[in-house]
Image (cartoon, rainbow, N blue to C red; front, side, top):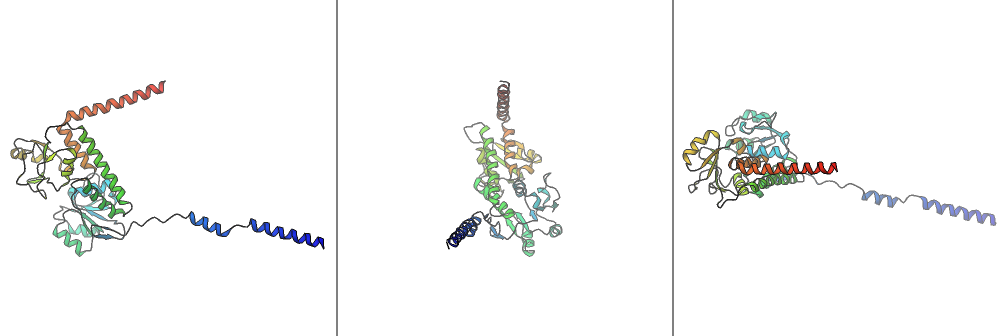
Length: 318
């Protein structure tokens, strides 16, 4: 009898030990649940300027140099399938030329089958075509300050890559342009009165206060003499400028109109852009006006670089 009692107790002890060694299914399920990767928020649908996008556009037509420049700097050149002739530079490849933006080649436009058109001031013909063919026509206002420049970039980036990925790209480009303009403004000499400037893109077409050049002049501390005008129209109360920038073939005519101003040539292909080219053009203008100031800056930068190299060499030798 004692032997059976001992055997029974030994069997009971084994069962208890085995239960303690078995995996805890409830605990495993809880642990597995805490390590699950959360699902990323969806990029689409997203609404931009009243247009709802359910997916990323893949075939985009760009209608102005300003938008083309921004699209390039935001990293979306591969999406662009067509643009007017005056938008195409060496940066664009395999893009269909659509002729003059005011008299588009509609046959080529139809053949492209775009799923988005980016523009700033659409013609009646383009608006009618987009409506008839149910192609979204995203019309963007020209930026005039840092805030509206970021809005401009954000609208493009959000439409092309979504509500989560777009804004950071726009913010990054805005900061790049802003920082570059700040670096240029630091080098400029301090004057008692702000420099009065005017940019003429075409005959009787000047950069008014509702254009991106208002942002540039403000960033550089210059005064736009056409600030009171709208839509590139010369305002009646415009003051005499100190400096006029214009395409090379317009210099003589501008000199006759503005006899007391310095008239300097500016490539129109640069002046109509709104991406990083904007800050590069501003620097070019400043260097043309104040070459000595920038020479001093270059000498200082070169000296600093030499000093750094020298210090590094000495430290290494020691």
